[in-house]
Image (cartoon, rainbow, N blue to C red; front, side, top):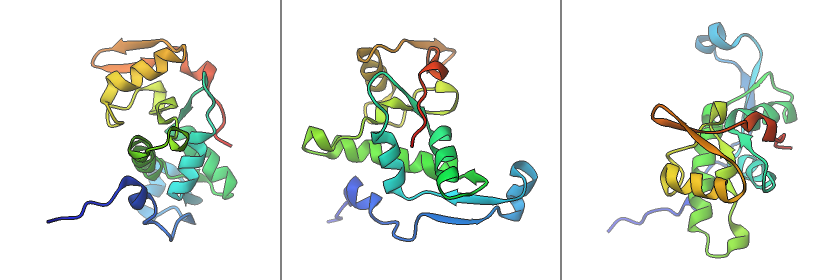
Length: 155
């Protein structure tokens, strides 16, 4: 019998984060010189919780804010996106509604909805439309219309 870790336990399994280090040589051609901030899951969750109803954030924007907070050149958006996914699932796993991060307000780059959030595109779309956002389809992907006008800085 395998014991599956809860999403909350998974979020807690990164005690070594946050960290700031030099941008690795293979990434420098694309990202340039400087430092990269890798957030802790808690930082990502706090940023997602700080997005009020009617407003939006992107994983990229959260990564930028984390970079500023840690005085780094850039934030690691890959890690930020992974932790946003984990926060979303931990929120759905939470029993008390007050412990649920409003993850549906955090979008992918360009205002795209995230199919990997609980319930997929349909669930995120429903929550966003309930809060007054308009979701549009472009090809096979879905985006919040005029999302840039509704962005908030994560902190």
